[in-house]
Amino acid sequence: MNPAALQGPILIAEDDRNTSALVATYLEREGFKTLAAYDGEQALELARRQAPGFVILDVMLPKLDGWEICRELRRFSDVPILMLTAREEEIDRVLGLSLGADDYVVKPFSPRELVERVKAILRRVGGSPHPGERPLVQAGLVLDPLKHKVTLHGRPVELTGSEFKLLRALMSAPGRVFSREELLNHFYQHGEVVVDRVIDVHIGKLRQKVEQDPARPRLILTVRGFGYRFAEPGEG
Image 1 (cartoon, rainbow, N blue to C red):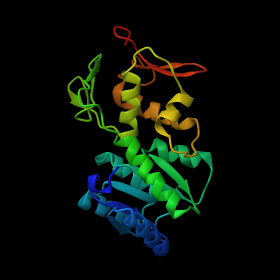
Image 2 (tube, helix red, strand yellow):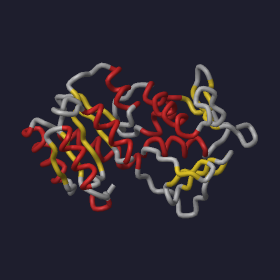
Image 3 (tube, rainbow, N blue to C red):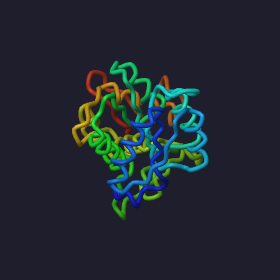
């Protein structure tokens, strides 16, 4: 994505000022605008006031930690979120993704790699549809690729960029079974290290938003031992 096309600056929420300044320097070299927050309360205030186009969020922030900030951000924004942490446990990654983060980087990290992660996320969540692409419709669920909107029985459904891309892929081929590996390759095409459970987390969040009963899904179906598929017309 061209940095000039990004709506709003990149918010760097990191209490270590040296790390924050280093990340800002590398991003600004690539043409991005940045702003900094050094604690959780300041990060939320800036997010509400400045409407950033991307958030880099350290987990261990003073006043409010990164988990709480991510949860609060998702109450009013679908801005892409990249979380930073000094812990490498898979449970931390899954927790961050379950709260709505788009990716996860473990400290210490290369600033160049971090910038490439940011670019990859922006490509993933901001992919442009073909000009003639029509809305996808089934069982009251409508996904409009051109307007980047989803509605369910006429009511708007707020999705993160990754959730939108996943739903679009599934709805574009009803009945086709996508393996977890296929879906991972679809979203992470630039060498990012991810775990299989990332897809399960996104599917779980999608079901919470589009299924009448997420515990008994009728639209996004599990194919045990293989992956997921979207219900065929008349099946959901």
